Length: 548
Figure (cartoon, rainbow, N blue to C red):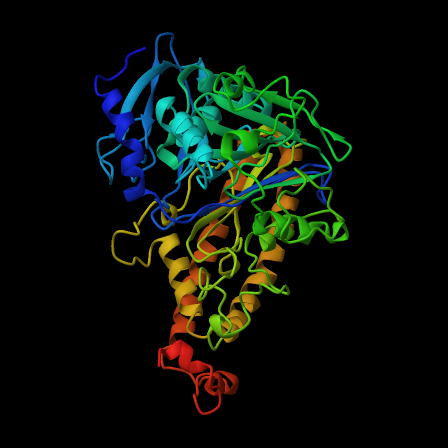
C-alpha cells in the first residue's frame, strides 16, 4: 500500500478541525425485518440531519477491474466534491480542504453501481444501509479516557463515508457488506472525521443487520430478527454479551471484531473474572443510565402494547411490532414530532401562533424529535428479495424536513437521474431548478402559517403518495414478469416511471411553494389564544418572556 507522507499530521489534527466543520445535528435510522412488514420486504432508513451536508445525488457506475488496479481511501471524501464525472474525481476540490488520499487498496475484479450523496446508501444488488453518528459520553474521567484512547491514540484511516462506499461497491448481500466493513476496520482502523463512532442499519431484503463502530478497531454486528424492528439515534445501543447473546428471550446472531472483549481487558476497562456480563455500550461509549427519547418514540409507536416508559435508561435492542409495517408507516415515524404525547412540539406557546413543530426544536427542555428542520434528506430503502436483482431494491427518497416533504421512488440501476438531484449548494443562492432548494423553500413557507399550510400540503401529498406506492409495486411485478425475456425493457420501464415521477413531484412542489407564498406573503392574523397569551394585561406571566 502507498501511504501519503503527511498522514500522521492529518490524523492528529482531524479531531481539532471537527468542531469547525461538523454539523450540530444528528441522524436517526430504523431497520425493519422482512416478517415485520406488510409485503415481506425489508426496510432500512436514514434521516440525514445536517446543517452543512452536500445534498447532491449521483449514480456511481460499477466496473470491471484489472489485476493491480487500486482505489483510494480518502478522508472526508463527501465534502462537496464533484462526482459527476466518476470514476474521475478531483479530491483536492472540496469545501473544507480536508479531503486527502490516505492509502490505496486493491480493487476487486468487479464493483457495483450505487447511489452516492452525503452518504452512499444502496447498490444495484439491493444492499442498502444508513448511518447515525455516535460519541463517547464524557461526563466523567472514565469517559474522557475511553474517548482519548479510541478516537485519538488508536485512531485509524477509514471514516464512515469511505467504509460505506467500499461496502456498496463490493457487496452482493448484507452479510457480505458487514464482513467487508469489519475486515477494513480490522486492517486499517476507524477514523473519527465523521464526528465519532457510528451505528448503521444494513439489509438486502433477506437479512437485516445493525452494526456499531466504537472507534479504533472495535465493532459489532447484530442480525435484526426478521419479525422485529431496531432503531438507532446517535447513541451506542449494544449491551448484549456476545458470549451469550440473549436478551428478553431472543437469541441474537452476533459477529464481533477479534479484539472486541480483549481490547477492554487490556485497557483495564473490563475484568473477565468479575462474573459480570460484557456490556459494550457502557464500556466503550460510557452510556450508563442515559435514556434516549427517539429510541422510546419509535418503539412506542410500533409496539404500544409494551408500554415502555419514556425515561428508561435502556430499551430492548429490538422489539416486535404490534402490527405489520409499511413504507408509509416508517415515513410517518421518520417525521414524528411527538404528536399526541406530553412532548408534542405542535402544542403550546413555544410552537408559536400556528403550531409549528419546527419553530421550537431545541427550545426549553423539549426533547429532540425524530423529525427536525435540518434534515438534508430521508432515504427509506425497501428491498424485495424475490424480485430480479436490478430493481429488487427501491429507495423512497425525499429532501428536507420529513413531515413537510414527500417520497419518490428511485433505484441505482435506473438509466439516469433528473438534473434536479445534481445541482445547487446550501452555500450558494436559492435555485428554482434544485430539488433540495425547492423542498427547503416550501418548508420555510409552511412556517409562515403552519397549521393552515399543512392542509394544502396534505391535500396534494397524501393521495399522490398513496397512488405512487401502488403504481410502483404494480410496475415492479410487471417488470419481474418481463425480465426473463426483456431485461433491458423491464429496467427501462421502471427507470422512465421513476424519472417522470421525480420530475412530477418537483413541478408540483414548485407550484405549491408559489401558491403558499402568494397566500401567506402578508402577515396573517394571529389566533385569539396567541393574542391573549402575548398580552401582558391578560397573561401576567408573559413579562418573563419579554424580559421586563
